Image (cartoon, rainbow, N blue to C red; front, side, top):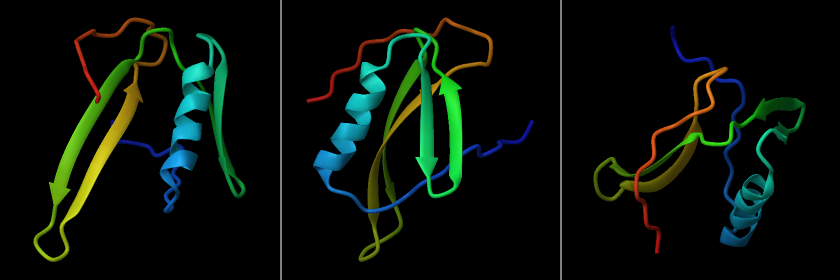
Length: 91
């Protein structure tokens, strides 16, 4: 089945504002709904207790238009509560 984008938001923000979004997600208890809103768009999701956490660093393009990114992604299968575990360190 092709990917279906349920919600998307992209804008330049301070690192402090980004950290606050991540803290809000991290403080949610298992079973609590996370609602994402921007303008008139919104989606609510219930993140399971152990989603898969993916971290990816990428470089795209060529000089002088090279774009670097770090992506943090939580993913899980609908109606499934377990995920793989592995060691990750972020410094």
